[in-house]
Image (cartoon, rainbow, N blue to C red; front, side, top):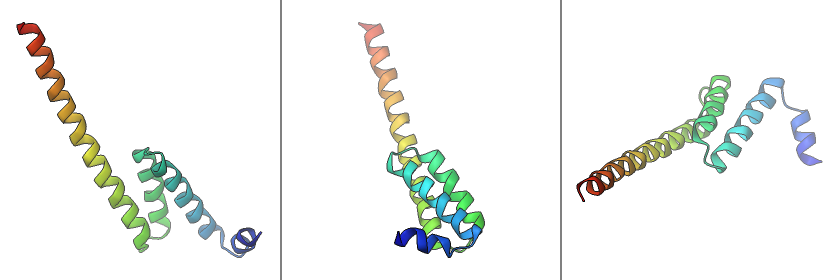
Amino acid sequence: MERQLLESTLTPAERKFLDLMRHGDNFLRIELLRPAKSYYKKALELSPNTKEVQMKIAECDRLLAFESKVIRILVVIGVIIIIALLLI
């Protein structure tokens, strides 16, 4: 009830911003980083100086970089295993 009252006093742009942030947070929570970052970037367009959004985008970038590094390592390990099996 209190949340509805608070949201009813917001402008449409503020409601849109909160909606985008909610979507981004939901995607981030289940580790779907690209959609999360996309929603955060849209929220940043509405409110360019919001530190929270900038921090969320930075977090997505950090996690995406880590994910990419893990994938590269797994590919190298896979190639090594395949080569080892071929040489046996």
